[in-house]
Each structure stands twice: as structure tokens, then as C-alpha cells.
Length: 530
Image 1 (cartoon, rainbow, N blue to C red):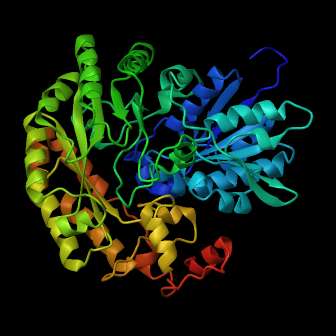
Image 2: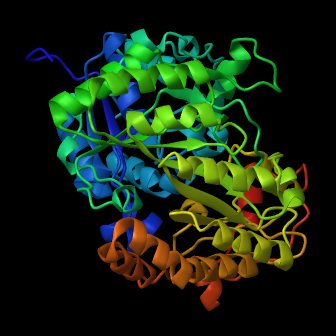
Image 3: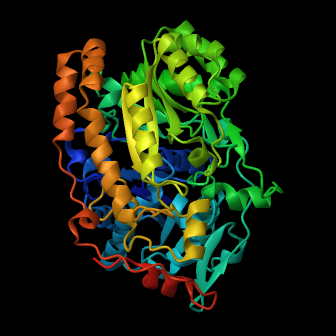
């Protein structure tokens, strides 16, 4: 930035680790580069803006400390980015994001602030009403940021010309039409503006390095945006909906965009050659899908001989045996599979239609290729009862994956489950941190047969049961050594405080929503009292 020139845009990634993960944040959880904030920085730079980025999460900065940094930088616009390590994590970051907005406005009232992220685009009007922000971005917010900064440079900003912008006009909320989604990803977002990030601070998940590798350095990248599937518990498409509509995409279709193979390889080249990074997460919601895309990346990595430790997400019904050997040769040591439930009926209820035989076959194929499996399971899906949740745990134990994530079903804003819960008057968390799987105020969905307390209690017991199972620990010792067994035992010793299970959280009865109730009033009515 030229001397004397005012900074155009300051991106802020708020710190929410302790609230979201409790004691797990200290040693076990990843410290991940803010992928979306980095992409926004890259897009705005190619749009001609001067940009800085503060990663409050990695630097451990409080809301007040971040506000001081914002005041000192005095940018034309501050963007508080509410994204997490995966799409569902956007909502749980909102409490921290809101606190940053409030702290900035208290310290520097004249500072213009915009909120961007998956959660805010799912609930934009409500976010504008509840948070201390001047603006809220509808959609992925890329064009919004560039055009808003340019508007703010003029004596009389014409906000009506800024795409995808929620703002106040004489105290009333207004929104402008969004633009179609960015299509030229290679040109407009060729990187994550790595030079703006504290790269030495990032750390891989504990399981990512069960083979004994150092967890640092580490980075996460996207090779695609979006997902063509329609799982009802997922909110990944929320940031893209307004852009999809602006581009004429049908309501029943999901956008799915790619960086070119060459662009992806160029990103990995920078991470390896400039920063010495070997631990890399492919953050795509669905990486193992397009054969040409995957094999192109794998073949490029095989030629480079980087000795990488990569992991990525896949679906049981997208893994093809011909891909697996290439993935392993390229450095993929882990694949995360969304197995979700032990009942085909429960899976079908959330639009995951694969059978039990496929699960066993695919897990076996992945392992036969020398790739470790992370099994992802969800308790409390709409069709779940005590028997089907037990079947899910039984399936997890039988598969005995190298690592397993156990989740409670959540009504994440932007997902079909959220819309269903709102229509049915299901009690939802009173604070956004309540949408975190590991927070003290976690409040999952009830099912037709089970209370939220029963679902969460089963989830926590299932976690302990799995990771203390001798069958599992014996497998870990054979694969990774005795030291990793002790590490996992320490993991199960980390206590999670749960207000719902201790009786400190009182849940109101099921409410019948009324079309006459304002959204904010309805949220208050549905909120869980502490």
C-alpha cells in the first residue's frame, strides 16, 4: 500500500476457539487458516483494493484487542468474516463475530463495518437487526465488498448500486439484487493471500498426524466451491443461493465450481516451496467426485514427489476404486466418509441413499489402498430413535475406522433442517455458540422419539465408548504405535461441560409458530433459557 494512502479493506477473522471447543481447543483441535477470509482478500486485491487481514483466531486476540487493531488501521471498510473450518461452523462463530462488531463500534463509532459469511447470508435481515454492523452481505459477498469500498470512496455513496447488500435506509432494512456467482476462480481468486496470514501459527487436527508427523506447519485450501448433493442437514449452499438465482440457476440445482488443476497445483507449490507445508486439508465439501479433476491433481502431485500428508472429504457413493491408488500415491493419507447412520431408513430421511453393503465395501477399498478412514456419524436425525442410534454406534464399532467423528443433528441456518425446525416450532439455541458440537450450551435437535437431552447424552457416551474400546485401541497401536494410544486416552479424559445434561439449561415445550410473529420475536420465543 502506498504511503499516505488509506487502507481500503480490513478483513477480520474473530476468535471463538474456547467458546466453540472448550478444553479441546488447547491441544486437540486444528488451528486453521481462515480460508474464506483469504479468498476474499485475494478477490479484492485482483479487484484493485488495498487489503489487510487479521486472523484473531490464530493470534488469540479478544474482541477488544481486535477492535484496537481496527481503530489503528482505520480502513475505509472493516469486514468481519463469520466462517469456520467447515460450512456448519459459520453459525457457531457468530457470537464472536458479533462481539467484534460491538467492540469496534464502541471504540471507533465512525468505522464502517460489514458482516460476511455463511450464517449471515442465511439470516441476513435478522443479522442486520441484531448485530452492530452497518452492512450485511447477501451471498458469498465478493462483489459486494469490492463495490461497497468503491462506493464509500465517493462523497455520497449510492448503496443501491452495490450488489448483494443489506443496509438500513431511514432505519428500515433494504437489500440490493446480487450478481451471479464468480465463475473465473483462477483469475479472481488465484490464492488465499498467504502473505497476509500468520502461516507459522496453523496446526493440523490431532488425528491428521497420528502417524507421528509434526502437526505444524499446516494449511487448508479449496479446489472446488459448493456441492451438487442435497443432504438436508447441510448448509453449504447458503452463501451461494442469491448468486445462483441471479445467474438463473434452478432452485433445485446446486452450483459446483472448480479451480483448474494447474491453479490448484500452483497453490500447493507455494505452500510447499515457500512455507515448507506438507500437512494439507482439501476443504472442499465434496472433493472425491469429478474423476478428471481428481486425477489431474493427483498426477501433478505424483510428478512433484512432495511427500504430502493430505486429507479430503468423500461420499460413500462417489468413491471409485480406480481413484484410490492415485490418491494414495499423491499423498492422501486420510479420507473422511459421511456414513451418518446405521439405518438405511434414517439415511434416506436426510437424502443419503446408499446401502449398508456399500459402506462396508467402500471402507474396505479405501483401507486396501493404504488410506485411513475418518467415519462421520450423526445422532438425532429426524427418523432416529434409541434403537437406530444404537445401530449407528454398532456400525461405527464394527467398521472400526482409524478415526470417528460423532455429531448431534443440528438445525444449522441455511439448511433444510433449520427451515423445518422453524416451521415446527422446535426449540433452538439461545446463543449461536449453542450450534457448536462441543460447546457448553450445545443444543441439538430432538427427534420424533427422543429429546434433545437424550440425543446429546447418547452422543457424548458414544464418543467415550468408541475411543476406549479395546478393539479400536488395539488397531491404533498396530497402525500408529503405543504413543498414539496414550494420546487418544488423554483425548477422552478432556471433559466437556454440558448445561443441557447437567440440568442448567431449561428447554421450553414445542411451540407452534405463527406467521404473524416477527422473526426476531420468534427467535426470542424459541430461545433456550440459560
